[in-house]
Image 1 (spheres, rainbow, N blue to C red):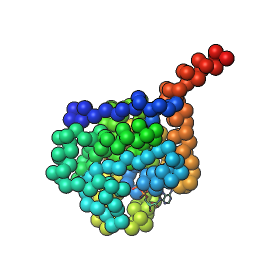
Image 2: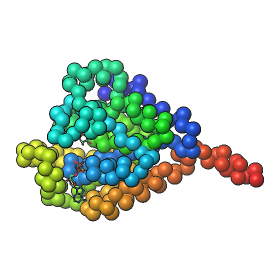
Image 3: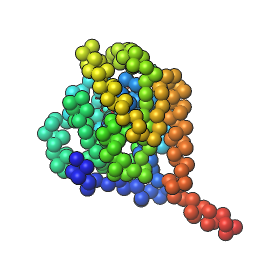
Image 4: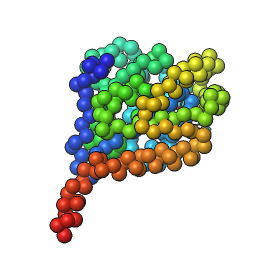
Length: 222
Ligand code: ADP
Ligand code: 5GP
């Protein structure tokens, strides 16, 4: 699969800014809280923009085309694969999902970091493409009982869909060790604080602060 999308690159070198853009990934078993945390982060931080994925799954009540996902047919998805439009793509719960490359580069060009709600397969591909720019965060529920309760209280899925998500939770959780950070989302506000701390710290990495060389040179010349 990686070969199919090998022509897609992240263009992160043109920013006339003091730091490289970050690709910030949140993954978790369904129901652990990543969408909630992603919304909170987008609300709190102007310097990060959401990557809106393409999917072949059916729209859920309340979802908007272009905001939650770009909803496409199987044929349209295949065409986009053939056109090398995707940075990564994967099949999750029998539906296809992908990250379109163009908007990611546009956000980086506009000086924004990019936030991804993608699964472990997509995270691996993104890391192969742009490892040095990727920060991977995995969200765990405090318990499987609590996970089921959250899926039920979210009120978006029928009982059989929730059973399916619970069955898949264990296999998703098994990929926790492919991430840089792992957080247990017990208390939402505490977990959100940690997400913000990770982002703030990663933005300060020396390798990302491309403006430092000039700054230090000027400092020494004073
Ligand atoms: P995901 O995007 O991982 O599938 P959601 O963000 O949709 O999960 O969260 C699932 C449900 O759990 C939502 O109803 C959300 O409000 C709730 N939730 C998220 N985090 C917590 C938390 N720490 N404590 C209690 N409920 C939470
Ligand atoms: P949902 O259909 O519940 O919105 O998402 C199902 C799963 O697909 C979640 O684990 C979500 O992270 C993952 N997903 C959403 N968009 C993408 C994407 O563009 N690429 C990949 N690889 N996974 C995605």
